[in-house]
Length: 256
Image (cartoon, rainbow, N blue to C red; front, side):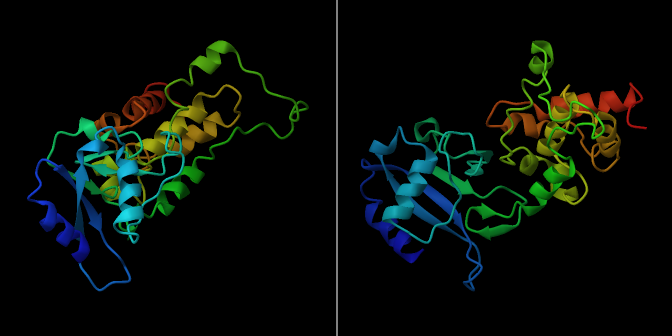
């Protein structure tokens, strides 16, 4: 932290060289320090870089203690989800030159337990994902249980807009209802995934899935604030899936 502040002071005079700065939320459970920001000057030649590239550059050349998750660098795995300038997004998809602010501020995903720096604990999130049984379930007594279950083009088309979710948790961590009820409310990402499996024509567990979701805490804690849809880095609409679930239960009488 102290080295970074020295670097910043030395370079403040070169405004033509360093037009922007990135400040990164830092917290280390092994240090008896309150959370702080490390501040790093950015060269103009980084304009076309992704935020993830900048974080890697800082870790390699300025501060090796910086911690964050990354993997595919293609917006597929969801590992590098974080809050960049007050928006939950993927660092590998956020371009540096699209940010007009003097300071680029990077936080971990909000309202999540922090393990270190930008790394949050997603144990509860994945446990909730496991609760909805995210796999195709067949009838065990069926004679064709070991044969491939085919799907029509129309049935496959219904899954578009739902199967693309990469479980980055950007939407769930932007939802106020999930902030205060994370132990009971499933959240936008898990509910979208739940609807995806309910829609799948190859699955035989539809009624049980709906019955599990039909709960005032698991589903109906959603108040359609729409933060989830606004922040999704894949352009999906979790709020739409949640409304479909509510409609299916309330007006179709399913799940009882």
